[in-house]
Image 1: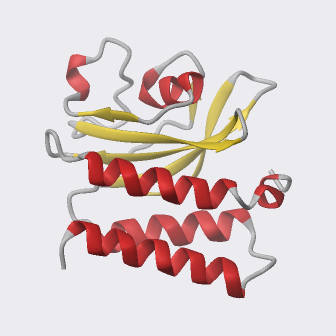
Image 2 (image 1 turned 60 degrees about the vertical axis):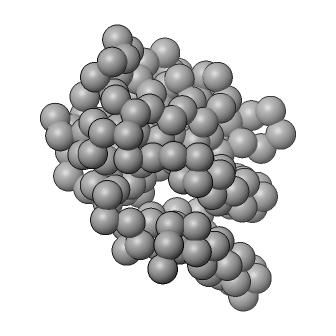
Length: 161
């Protein structure tokens, strides 16, 4: 199965889960998304969410799969901070070329981070790292943004944060 077909199946699985689980909790849904990514794409070594803490001006570690992780990321730092602040997906072929990159894992070479947006407000970011250079492309971007939109569409979920 090609990459796009895998993503289409992930989207269908999440849509079905949202349809049958009307009271799904945000952590459950995030864990489901993370597991679907990790099961389908072997080039992803770290998959997880960072959640907004407006009072402290930082993102804090949410559900994830992988080894090393930063527990807190200031809004002004790293690829996650940039995705949060700019409210747009960051597709990075080589993280070592970015002066603002935070090395939570010494093996990460490329990264994609998509904001979870409700209207004009970023609630969280979805962070995916790879040990491979240039691991992510426009297909990853398209479907990761779609999945973040599905997550954000459940705005009542984020009232639990």
